Image: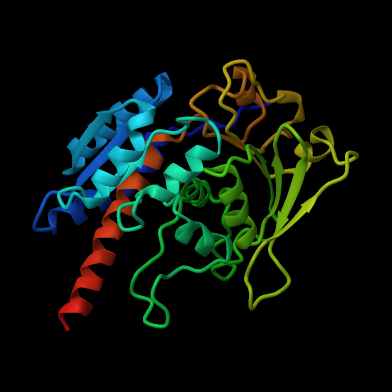
Length: 315
């Protein structure tokens, strides 16, 4: 049986990089992004290096600030107040517990390029796209990794463009092995809001995300599945399998992947063995470059939203 295709993140990222580069040139200043690294995670350092190179090549200024994790809170408050900084990001995990959620909320919504602030999460989960109804000029920020995944699925043709916007994943089943608050859960909600049935897997259970019945609320539904609905049963039914397990030892079982399935890994670790290429119709082994391009796109959106607000204040 002929193998499918491996699609590199650099190929998918290219049009977004071009879009961002063009938009930066129209600004009257050079936007500055600051990344805070407060852990010893080599993946965080690698991501910071990618971000730095991408920023430099596309016309942004990037500064990596390495701090002790106990000093991160003070550093974030200072960065919020610094008018020379347009965007702030943190390489998580830092503490690996609820203190990380507190730090996410500490970043000003006006500078939160990763879209992790509660304001943006609320909008995502309730399918609210704008910050200023009914004018609808300021777009809400979508968490950058989740949005990158949506853009990848669009590029791969998983979204059916014949169907109306907001329903283009109708009939698709997606399995996500990750339910973190940073990526897995918001991604499941996004895809469910677009019409997919999403199976969200973590170490404890499997949950099913679907679009809600109450269209006025526009909120997805979450159902905890019984123990009879196993990974072995559900995975072969899925059109798309997405993994994000931050472990070198974890490998998704290749035998559970039906031939022709679209397979995407967003972990910095390799979640699939090489034989996945013999089963996957389309295989995206990493998404980092797309995520960074979308992060910079979010930064430009934050700048645009601020310009709109300042224009309104001037009037």
